[in-house]
Length: 299
Image 1 (cartoon, rainbow, N blue to C red):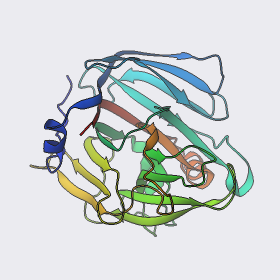
Image 2: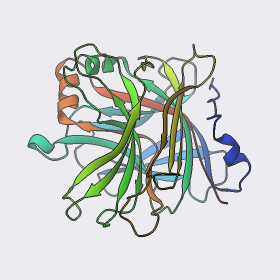
Image 3: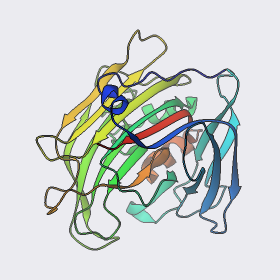
């Protein structure tokens, strides 16, 4: 039996009183994942209860084999019934040396949106207890990501939603967000520079339990760009505020606002340090997603 995901109360009125231009509302019951022609992609077909022209999405790995990384439709991990989307990341198969990493991501490309609302349920596998035992601080463990601009564009920006961990063994896992601009170099070069980063130090993410996650993005500059995140555990009477940012949501040097062009609504992306630590401790980096809603509206 599926749970109803709580809506992001502080901004949902904006979406209710403007015409919807894109909407998906998924459970993963009856969904299928099959191999695509490109061995670094799988095709995910979901049952969409709203209107969308194409219910087939690609899951991208970039490199590796199913022994390194895998996505699958599996039974709900807490036996409530139904199915969930499972990401399993055992080896960092992308790159080598200090740049090695691993990636599993659902791709929604070729967009041109100035706002998005997303809600989903997130379940952290008990193996992430080994992530908590990682000694260093880490902010790179991405579960959703938005890109404003395409690879190679001069003014690219991204907003990442991450499961972060403070410095020290046994520290809690926390939901954090960052807005970053791309600086220097062409595609494959340059660096990401954070313009803002925010999260809550008081709302630990539990393991082995479904959590409602809700966020909203609105295009804007330092005065009116918005990114808001809330979460709700079963024990919470109301959604809990995690991130409430008013700041740039596209590259500040862009001559005109840059819309959301690529969206990864379900993602597992992190460094070899984290992947290897979890694996060498006896686990695998893995998470589950379910009951996903994505809206965008026009003015």
